[in-house]
Amino acid sequence: MTSHGYFSVVFVFACLATTAFSQLSPNYYDYSCPKALSTIRSVVDAAVQKERRMGASLLRLHFHDCFVNGCDGSILLDPTSTIDSEKNANPNFQSARGFEVVDEIKQAVDEACGKPVVSCADILAVTARDSVVALGGPTWDVQLGRRDSTTASRDAANAEIPAPFFNLSQLISNFQNHGLDEKDLVVLAGGHTIGFARCVSFRDHIYNDSDINPYYAQQLKYICPKNGGDSNLSPLDPTPARFDVAYYSDLVQKKGLLHSDQELYNGGSTDALVKQYSYDTTSFYKDFANSMIKMGNIQPLTGNQGEIRVNCRKLN
Image 1 (cartoon, rainbow, N blue to C red):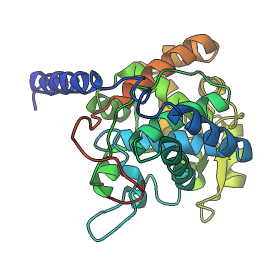
Image 2: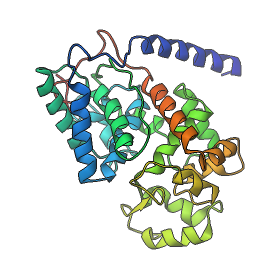
Image 3: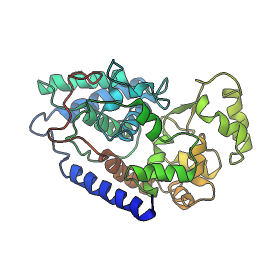
Image 4: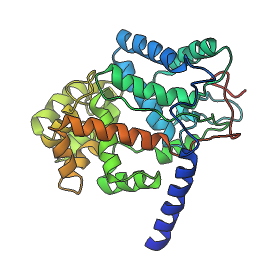
């Protein structure tokens, strides 16, 4: 495809996203269920207080949902004879967590509303925001009014969710394909300031890459041997239960856990922004909030599209 054709596709995508965005509103449930947002927040706060890692898991669910055919709750569907569940895709299998918390939120919200009013896709979007806030990060007005998909695609999840071995150009292209720019890439990668990653996702980086602090690599080898231990966990930054800028500070010191993380500070076009965020918490928080709103607008189902699931794990 020519560059002119590529940008035409991006332009059309942007127009469609803007049209969908115009149908979303932070006040969407003010009349149909005024207790919806406070109910979600209370369940998230309790879950994060019980297990700090859950905050990162809930944020990741929203990310992985939005990168596969838009923010439509498809990641929550269990496998059936007609649903090839995204839970079984490589980026999610034995890694994605928090589904039980989403079930708990859905039940609590439906009880508060008196009936199924709030979509599972909207629950994921609000839960991501509330998880960040619970771990000390910024807040933002979540645009609401998404409806739930009636399909899922494991193949699309494998193809669309950014992989931990991606280089910078692959990351930039992947984000552009979803209507997100280079700044969004750097900002949203900051979500890795919370949570952990499995050994299998960073083994090649610590044994085969040269763009890593050798002392840091040696420490990680005790956690992640060359053979075995695929599910052993390492924090993505030194403060995995606090939403801060330590992730960016680590990148500047060549201590990115994943190959794709360190690619953001490796002599390329994103270095300057990483360096800025490593000491400018205010800018990071502001930009993260804006990029989360932008990501949440990726091809949502609205109006009469999709459905409002009674059970987030299966179709009505």
